[in-house]
Structures are given as C-alpha cells and as structure tokens.
Image (cartoon, rainbow, N blue to C red; front, side):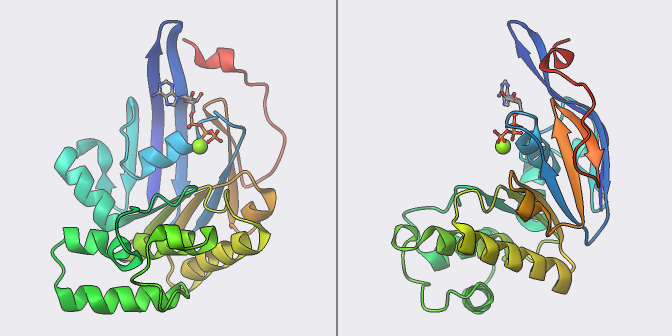
Length: 238
Ligand SMILES: Nc1ncnc2c1ncn2[C@@H]1O[C@H](COP(=O)(O)OP(=O)(O)OP(=O)(O)O)[C@@H](O)[C@H]1O
Ligand SMILES: [Mg+2]
C-alpha cells in the first residue's frame, strides 16, 4: 500500500541543511493500522504530510496504492489528496463559515458529485459518526469530540483507502479520545482502511497493529517500543 524509499526532507537554514527526515524506508501493508510516535520535532508530521502528498520529499520515492507521488504535478497531487487520502488533524481544521454538512461535502462538491449523491452520502456519514441532526449547525456550535467526528466524516467522504491522522485525539478528553480511536479501529477492521496515526499517547498507540518510532528525523523502531539508538539533532545538520 505505502512504500517509502530513501526519503529525506531537507530545509536549508543559515546553520546548514537541516534534515527533518533523513533517508527513511518504510513499508505499510494495505489494511494495516500503524501508529507513529516520537518526541516533538522528530519529523512525524513531516512524514505524514509526505505520505499524503501535502508536501514533497527533497529526495527519495513514495508510492501510495500504485501511485508514484514524485511523478505528479500540482494538479495531479491535488486530485490524489482529494480522492485517495482522508486527513484528520489535531485541531480538526473545519471551515468555520460552513455548516457540518457543507464541511463533510467539500471533496464531493469539488468532484462534481450531484446534489442527490451529496445528500445521501452526507446523511450516511453523519449516521456513521453518530451526529445525526447536526448537519445544519456550524463547527463552533459543536464540542471538540463532535468536531473531530465531523472531520473524520469529511475524511471519509470520498471513501479513501488511506486515512492519515495527526494526533487526532490530542485535543480531546479521555472519553472523546477513546470514541475517536474506536471509530478509527472500526474503519480499519470493517472497511479495511489503512490508517497511519501520529500520537503522543502510548495508550492510543496500542490500538494500532504496529508502532513506528521517529527520532531526530530517523525511523528508529518498527513494531517495538523503547530502545532508541544514540541519535542527536547534530546528526541532522549536514
Ligand atoms: N518549513 C520549515 N523550515 C525549517 N524547519 C522545519 C520546517 N518545517 C518543519 N521543520 C522542522 O522539521 C522538524 C520536524 O517537524 P515536524 O513538524 O515533522 O515534527 P513533529 O514530530 O510532528 O513534532 P510535534 O510532535 O511537535 O508535532 C522540526 O525540527 C521542525 O522545526
Ligand atoms: Mg507534529
């Protein structure tokens, strides 16, 4: 499903080239639920953005579901993001001036779905995330947990095979966080969606099949916890 080969993301700073990610390789199977952990600044969000085509690597190859991302132009990348990937962020990123229904329908509208299609898909998604009756409300009228469920419904609208979630429970209390994790688990098990989730919470990571640990731009552990090699920030300054 996802193959990352020799991927680096380099920022040119006055102090030299800074490797946000340095020469990483990963393979994620179709239908896997993978958690990405690691300290702040280690490169987790950068990795997720590269996987979802929100950003491009400085070097290396990324293949998602038979699509080689490096070969795509801006327009093709936009289409890839819109149709193949569902994004969920820590701060929900709903559009405040649009209703819940309009937020969920965004990618459908962008892909010229008919009014009837939009209505039936949005209705189904609202029921899937347990928000029936909230369609005409605005995000500011919902709780954090409800807003995150809207964001998940929006991510699901195009039936993507891949969900990329960056700290989806980061702003939620225990109960709401658990509900979101249950929902992601259900999508993974029942719809065979591949899920890659960044989290700081070891308990949240336990719902995943596998934990990948990133430290100082390097993937240092796959599948196990603890035992970091002695990598430092200096290693990333070339
Ligand atoms: N545009 C940029 N220019 C320079 N450095 C950047 C840029 N974007 C990110 N970085 C650096 O890349 C590194 C990785 O950032 P990233 O956002 O991936 O970290 P993270 O692991 O997601 O951290 P957090 O857990 O705090 O969200 C950080 O050291 C960051 O400062
Ligand atoms: Mg981050």
